[in-house]
Image 1: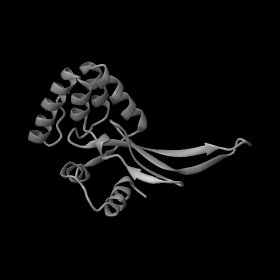
Image 2: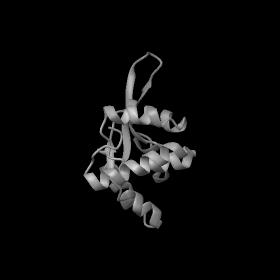
Image 3: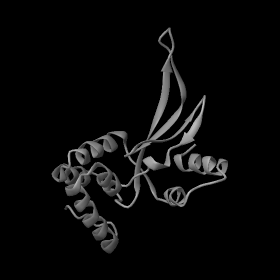
Image 4: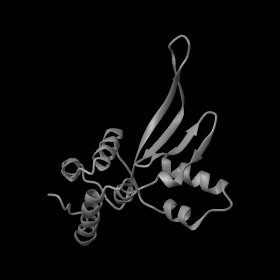
Length: 147
């Protein structure tokens, strides 16, 4: 199942949702490689605008979307054999959803855009870059600010 399908399933299971959760479920989700997601976290945590620009030069990313990566969860038994237990989806804020053999769920608070993650982490230089780039993307239909 895709992340979006999983979120829809979990949403049907909840009867009460806050307005913030509803807004987050309506966000655009953008699948990215796990390595890009980790690299984005590192440069934002360091408030490194040059690193952000370099990363985003190599990969066009919709800055208004929530980047996420899928991870297959496996366990290794006593004999060394790998067994698939399910999937997890990670966003900038951490694990945002899981569908494992034993359980499933979501953590909507971890679904953050690059700008939201920069704000949470106090990366003011990156936040300024993301806000400027998002405005340029809206005006120029995904034209990148850093090129």
